[in-house]
Length: 282
Image (cartoon, rainbow, N blue to C red):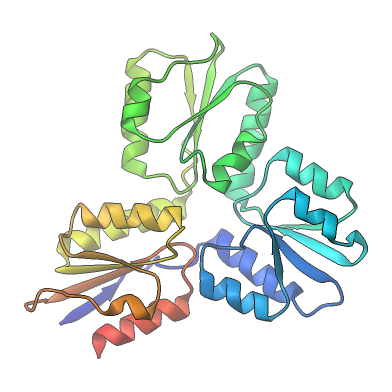
Protein backbone atom coordinates (compact mmCIF):
# COMPACT_ATOMS: atom_id res chain seq x y z
CA UNK A 1 0.00 0.00 0.00
CA UNK A 2 1.32 3.41 -1.00
CA UNK A 3 0.76 6.49 1.17
CA UNK A 4 1.13 9.92 -0.42
CA UNK A 5 0.85 13.22 1.46
CA UNK A 6 0.11 16.38 -0.49
CA UNK A 7 3.15 18.67 -0.56
CA UNK A 8 1.20 21.74 0.58
CA UNK A 9 -0.68 20.02 3.43
CA UNK A 10 -0.60 21.86 6.77
CA UNK A 11 0.18 25.35 8.01
CA UNK A 12 0.05 28.10 5.43
CA UNK A 13 2.33 31.13 5.70
CA UNK A 14 -0.20 33.32 7.50
CA UNK A 15 -1.15 30.72 10.12
CA UNK A 16 2.47 29.72 10.80
CA UNK A 17 3.41 33.36 11.24
CA UNK A 18 0.56 33.93 13.71
CA UNK A 19 1.20 30.77 15.74
CA UNK A 20 4.96 31.34 15.87
CA UNK A 21 4.37 34.90 17.08
CA UNK A 22 2.16 33.77 19.96
CA UNK A 23 4.67 31.11 21.04
CA UNK A 24 7.42 33.75 21.02
CA UNK A 25 5.31 36.11 23.13
CA UNK A 26 4.28 33.47 25.68
CA UNK A 27 6.23 33.33 28.89
CA UNK A 28 7.07 37.04 28.83
CA UNK A 29 6.34 39.71 31.42
CA UNK A 30 2.94 40.65 30.02
CA UNK A 31 -0.15 38.46 29.85
CA UNK A 32 -0.96 37.31 26.31
CA UNK A 33 -4.51 36.98 24.99
CA UNK A 34 -5.56 36.17 21.44
CA UNK A 35 -8.76 37.72 20.09
CA UNK A 36 -10.51 34.45 19.32
CA UNK A 37 -8.60 31.12 19.06
CA UNK A 38 -5.34 31.73 17.21
CA UNK A 39 -6.22 28.86 14.83
CA UNK A 40 -8.94 26.23 14.46
CA UNK A 41 -6.89 23.47 16.05
CA UNK A 42 -7.66 22.40 19.60
CA UNK A 43 -4.28 20.78 20.30
CA UNK A 44 -2.40 23.98 19.47
CA UNK A 45 -4.86 26.13 21.42
CA UNK A 46 -4.61 23.79 24.44
CA UNK A 47 -0.81 23.84 24.30
CA UNK A 48 -0.79 27.64 24.27
CA UNK A 49 -3.23 27.67 27.17
CA UNK A 50 -0.76 25.60 29.20
CA UNK A 51 1.82 28.27 28.40
CA UNK A 52 -0.44 30.93 29.88
CA UNK A 53 -2.00 32.28 26.68
CA UNK A 54 -5.64 33.22 27.12
CA UNK A 55 -8.47 33.89 24.69
CA UNK A 56 -10.98 36.74 24.57
CA UNK A 57 -13.96 36.17 22.32
CA UNK A 58 -15.50 39.62 22.34
CA UNK A 59 -14.91 43.22 23.38
CA UNK A 60 -16.97 42.81 26.56
CA UNK A 61 -14.34 40.46 28.02
CA UNK A 62 -11.66 43.13 27.69
CA UNK A 63 -13.25 44.98 30.61
CA UNK A 64 -11.86 42.33 32.97
CA UNK A 65 -8.27 42.81 31.77
CA UNK A 66 -5.64 45.39 32.71
CA UNK A 67 -4.30 47.19 29.61
CA UNK A 68 -1.07 47.97 31.45
CA UNK A 69 0.15 44.37 31.50
CA UNK A 70 -1.83 42.74 28.68
CA UNK A 71 -1.03 42.15 25.01
CA UNK A 72 -3.87 41.39 22.59
CA UNK A 73 -2.90 39.35 19.54
CA UNK A 74 -5.02 39.73 16.42
CA UNK A 75 -5.10 36.35 14.69
CA UNK A 76 -4.46 35.72 11.00
CA UNK A 77 -8.21 36.00 10.17
CA UNK A 78 -8.06 39.70 11.06
CA UNK A 79 -10.78 41.76 12.73
CA UNK A 80 -13.08 44.62 11.80
CA UNK A 81 -11.95 48.23 11.91
CA UNK A 82 -14.27 48.86 14.88
CA UNK A 83 -12.81 46.00 16.93
CA UNK A 84 -9.24 47.00 16.16
CA UNK A 85 -9.83 50.65 17.06
CA UNK A 86 -11.72 49.73 20.23
CA UNK A 87 -8.90 47.50 21.50
CA UNK A 88 -6.37 50.21 20.71
CA UNK A 89 -8.54 52.91 22.28
CA UNK A 90 -8.73 50.97 25.53
CA UNK A 91 -4.97 51.20 25.78
CA UNK A 92 -4.00 47.61 25.05
CA UNK A 93 -0.79 46.79 23.24
CA UNK A 94 -1.75 45.09 19.98
CA UNK A 95 0.32 42.55 18.09
CA UNK A 96 -1.37 42.26 14.71
CA UNK A 97 -0.77 38.93 12.95
CA UNK A 98 -3.47 39.47 10.34
CA UNK A 99 -2.40 37.52 7.26
CA UNK A 100 -0.96 39.96 4.68
CA UNK A 101 -3.31 38.50 2.05
CA UNK A 102 -6.29 39.24 4.30
CA UNK A 103 -4.97 42.71 5.07
CA UNK A 104 -4.78 43.38 1.34
CA UNK A 105 -8.52 42.66 1.13
CA UNK A 106 -9.21 45.04 4.04
CA UNK A 107 -7.36 47.80 2.20
CA UNK A 108 -9.14 47.03 -1.08
CA UNK A 109 -12.69 47.14 0.31
CA UNK A 110 -11.91 50.21 2.39
CA UNK A 111 -10.63 52.13 -0.64
CA UNK A 112 -13.41 50.90 -2.93
CA UNK A 113 -16.20 51.70 -0.48
CA UNK A 114 -14.75 55.14 0.27
CA UNK A 115 -14.77 55.73 -3.50
CA UNK A 116 -18.52 55.07 -3.49
CA UNK A 117 -18.52 51.44 -4.64
CA UNK A 118 -20.67 48.62 -3.31
CA UNK A 119 -18.82 45.57 -1.96
CA UNK A 120 -19.67 41.93 -2.67
CA UNK A 121 -17.83 39.25 -0.69
CA UNK A 122 -17.75 35.59 -1.70
CA UNK A 123 -17.49 33.51 1.45
CA UNK A 124 -19.23 32.32 4.58
CA UNK A 125 -20.96 35.19 6.38
CA UNK A 126 -20.32 33.69 9.81
CA UNK A 127 -16.59 33.10 9.24
CA UNK A 128 -14.32 35.45 11.24
CA UNK A 129 -12.31 36.40 8.17
CA UNK A 130 -15.42 37.48 6.29
CA UNK A 131 -16.78 39.33 9.31
CA UNK A 132 -13.49 41.17 9.55
CA UNK A 133 -13.61 42.12 5.85
CA UNK A 134 -17.17 43.39 6.21
CA UNK A 135 -15.97 45.56 9.07
CA UNK A 136 -13.68 47.54 6.76
CA UNK A 137 -16.47 48.42 4.31
CA UNK A 138 -17.74 52.00 4.58
CA UNK A 139 -20.89 51.49 2.55
CA UNK A 140 -23.21 48.82 1.12
CA UNK A 141 -21.86 45.27 1.46
CA UNK A 142 -23.30 41.82 0.85
CA UNK A 143 -21.98 38.27 1.27
CA UNK A 144 -22.86 35.33 -0.96
CA UNK A 145 -21.61 31.79 -0.46
CA UNK A 146 -22.75 29.67 -3.39
CA UNK A 147 -24.04 29.53 -6.95
CA UNK A 148 -27.67 29.52 -5.82
CA UNK A 149 -27.30 32.81 -3.95
CA UNK A 150 -25.39 34.28 -6.90
CA UNK A 151 -28.36 33.59 -9.15
CA UNK A 152 -30.69 35.55 -6.85
CA UNK A 153 -28.18 38.30 -5.99
CA UNK A 154 -29.38 41.86 -6.43
CA UNK A 155 -27.14 44.91 -5.85
CA UNK A 156 -28.20 47.24 -3.05
CA UNK A 157 -27.58 50.31 -5.20
CA UNK A 158 -26.68 51.38 -8.72
CA UNK A 159 -23.05 51.90 -7.71
CA UNK A 160 -20.15 50.00 -9.31
CA UNK A 161 -19.43 46.75 -7.45
CA UNK A 162 -16.07 45.50 -6.19
CA UNK A 163 -16.04 41.74 -5.68
CA UNK A 164 -13.56 40.05 -3.32
CA UNK A 165 -13.50 36.60 -1.76
CA UNK A 166 -12.53 34.87 1.42
CA UNK A 167 -8.90 33.80 0.98
CA UNK A 168 -9.83 30.12 1.41
CA UNK A 169 -12.82 30.14 -0.96
CA UNK A 170 -13.26 27.23 -3.37
CA UNK A 171 -11.62 28.32 -6.63
CA UNK A 172 -14.01 26.43 -8.93
CA UNK A 173 -17.00 27.89 -7.09
CA UNK A 174 -15.43 31.35 -7.40
CA UNK A 175 -15.21 30.99 -11.19
CA UNK A 176 -18.80 29.74 -11.46
CA UNK A 177 -20.16 32.64 -9.39
CA UNK A 178 -18.16 35.25 -11.30
CA UNK A 179 -19.51 33.86 -14.59
CA UNK A 180 -23.09 34.19 -13.31
CA UNK A 181 -22.52 37.81 -12.22
CA UNK A 182 -20.89 38.75 -15.53
CA UNK A 183 -23.76 37.21 -17.50
CA UNK A 184 -26.11 39.28 -15.33
CA UNK A 185 -24.31 42.32 -16.76
CA UNK A 186 -23.59 43.89 -13.40
CA UNK A 187 -20.84 46.51 -13.28
CA UNK A 188 -18.43 44.30 -11.31
CA UNK A 189 -14.74 44.80 -10.69
CA UNK A 190 -13.55 41.25 -9.88
CA UNK A 191 -10.63 40.81 -7.51
CA UNK A 192 -9.57 37.19 -7.11
CA UNK A 193 -8.35 37.31 -3.51
CA UNK A 194 -8.08 33.56 -2.98
CA UNK A 195 -4.50 33.17 -1.76
CA UNK A 196 -2.03 31.12 -3.79
CA UNK A 197 -1.50 28.67 -0.93
CA UNK A 198 -5.22 27.87 -0.89
CA UNK A 199 -5.36 27.37 -4.66
CA UNK A 200 -2.28 25.13 -4.60
CA UNK A 201 -3.65 23.08 -1.71
CA UNK A 202 -7.02 22.63 -3.40
CA UNK A 203 -5.47 21.65 -6.75
CA UNK A 204 -3.13 19.14 -5.11
CA UNK A 205 -5.98 17.65 -3.07
CA UNK A 206 -8.16 17.28 -6.17
CA UNK A 207 -5.38 15.60 -8.13
CA UNK A 208 -4.46 13.23 -5.31
CA UNK A 209 -8.09 12.34 -4.55
CA UNK A 210 -8.70 11.47 -8.21
CA UNK A 211 -5.99 8.77 -7.93
CA UNK A 212 -6.46 7.55 -4.36
CA UNK A 213 -8.54 4.61 -3.13
CA UNK A 214 -8.81 6.29 0.28
CA UNK A 215 -8.41 9.99 1.03
CA UNK A 216 -7.73 11.35 4.54
CA UNK A 217 -8.38 15.05 5.18
CA UNK A 218 -6.95 16.30 8.49
CA UNK A 219 -8.13 19.45 10.22
CA UNK A 220 -10.18 21.11 12.93
CA UNK A 221 -13.92 20.56 12.87
CA UNK A 222 -14.44 24.34 12.77
CA UNK A 223 -11.90 24.91 9.98
CA UNK A 224 -13.56 26.35 6.89
CA UNK A 225 -10.65 25.68 4.55
CA UNK A 226 -10.39 22.05 5.70
CA UNK A 227 -14.10 21.54 5.06
CA UNK A 228 -13.58 22.84 1.52
CA UNK A 229 -10.72 20.37 1.03
CA UNK A 230 -12.98 17.57 2.21
CA UNK A 231 -15.71 18.58 -0.26
CA UNK A 232 -13.19 18.68 -3.13
CA UNK A 233 -11.76 15.27 -2.21
CA UNK A 234 -15.14 13.64 -1.60
CA UNK A 235 -16.21 14.64 -5.12
CA UNK A 236 -13.25 12.67 -6.52
CA UNK A 237 -12.79 9.81 -4.05
CA UNK A 238 -15.69 7.80 -2.66
CA UNK A 239 -13.78 6.80 0.48
CA UNK A 240 -12.85 10.26 1.81
CA UNK A 241 -12.61 10.78 5.57
CA UNK A 242 -12.42 13.96 7.66
CA UNK A 243 -10.37 13.44 10.82
CA UNK A 244 -9.32 15.81 13.58
CA UNK A 245 -6.97 13.66 15.67
CA UNK A 246 -5.30 10.24 15.62
CA UNK A 247 -8.25 8.94 17.64
CA UNK A 248 -10.42 9.38 14.54
CA UNK A 249 -8.33 6.95 12.49
CA UNK A 250 -10.40 3.91 13.45
CA UNK A 251 -11.94 3.81 9.99
CA UNK A 252 -13.72 1.14 7.98
CA UNK A 253 -11.93 1.21 4.63
CA UNK A 254 -11.99 -1.13 1.62
CA UNK A 255 -9.70 -4.15 1.94
CA UNK A 256 -8.09 -3.73 -1.48
CA UNK A 257 -6.51 -0.34 -0.88
CA UNK A 258 -3.51 0.44 -3.05
CA UNK A 259 -3.14 4.20 -2.59
CA UNK A 260 -3.97 6.34 0.46
CA UNK A 261 -3.85 10.08 -0.03
CA UNK A 262 -3.42 12.54 2.84
CA UNK A 263 -4.01 16.27 2.87
CA UNK A 264 -4.60 18.77 5.65
CA UNK A 265 -6.02 22.21 6.26
CA UNK A 266 -4.04 25.39 6.83
CA UNK A 267 -4.39 25.09 10.62
CA UNK A 268 -3.14 21.52 10.94
CA UNK A 269 0.28 21.11 12.63
CA UNK A 270 2.97 19.20 10.74
CA UNK A 271 3.42 16.89 13.73
CA UNK A 272 -0.14 15.60 13.42
CA UNK A 273 0.21 15.06 9.67
CA UNK A 274 3.37 13.03 10.23
CA UNK A 275 1.67 10.96 12.95
CA UNK A 276 -1.25 10.12 10.64
CA UNK A 277 1.18 9.28 7.85
CA UNK A 278 3.12 6.96 10.17
CA UNK A 279 -0.04 5.19 11.34
CA UNK A 280 -1.05 4.36 7.78
CA UNK A 281 2.40 3.17 6.80
CA UNK A 282 2.45 0.86 9.82
